[in-house]
Image 1 (cartoon, rainbow, N blue to C red):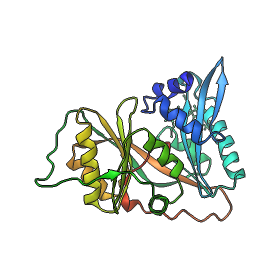
Image 2: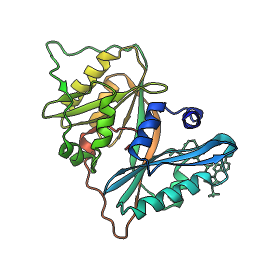
Image 3: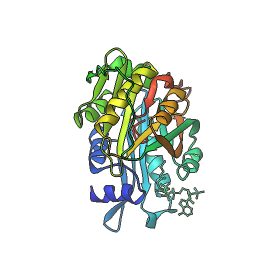
Image 4: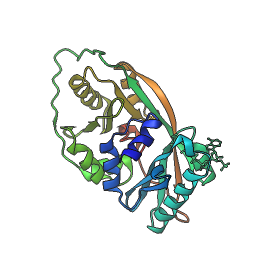
Length: 268
Ligand SMILES: CC(C)(COP(=O)(O)OP(=O)(O)OC[C@H]1O[C@@H](n2cnc3c(N)ncnc32)[C@H](O)[C@@H]1OP(=O)(O)O)[C@@H](O)C(=O)NCCC(=O)NCCS
């Protein structure tokens, strides 16, 4: 664990030891590393949202070991495993450093993904007379799947355990978690912009003094507008990429218009 945490820290990523533990717990057969000089120096993870989708993340090589083919070797091994399991599609969110490696392995660009950041201490005004009627989160597998495109209830359950998640009955949910640099807002899948706003404002009211990261799909213009309205600014640009793992695999049916926050670059 100290080696893994060091890898993400070196890259100035937001994952904590709890995030690494979650990935290792949810994907015990999908996480791989390379050991050299008595420590783990390169990693990949692949969560299986079986049978449709494998989500690849945490592609990290220690700065002293880069350019030796470690990330490529780990990805080839991971893809071999994913294909052997019969998974239809593999996806990931690529940084500019990772993207050429994935493109060489056959991944195609799907859409943009962005991290938006909100500085600590910003205030916002809740519209006068508005009362938030939010409820404890109830997991509804078919609701999330209809928008995300695959079954990821074990992930949502694991994320929900860490906090008191909120659900706007009939409209959707928002989760969040602590991070190494900032509190992470998401995933949030909500049917309407107004319901998404209420969930966001309820979350922001709880953490007024925290720096917040929110990873969103800019295709969803309502999410962008909400981010702007609440003092977020774009901080990082990534590219979502996908690879068909079986011959003639059909693309996943998903609907980004209600995905207000992704779960994370490492989860989708
Ligand atoms: C992206 C990253 C994982 C690549 O790791 P790596 O083990 O160095 O990758 P590889 O050795 O397999 O290199 C893949 C390609 O990049 C080139 N490359 C990678 N690092 C290089 C370096 N420091 N100098 C020169 N070339 C380099 C390699 O030459 C290779 O190209 P080739 O196939 O044409 O020879 C690593 O740079 C890293 O951890 N970056 C920070 C975190 C990050 O952005 N991860 C990707 C998340 S999507």
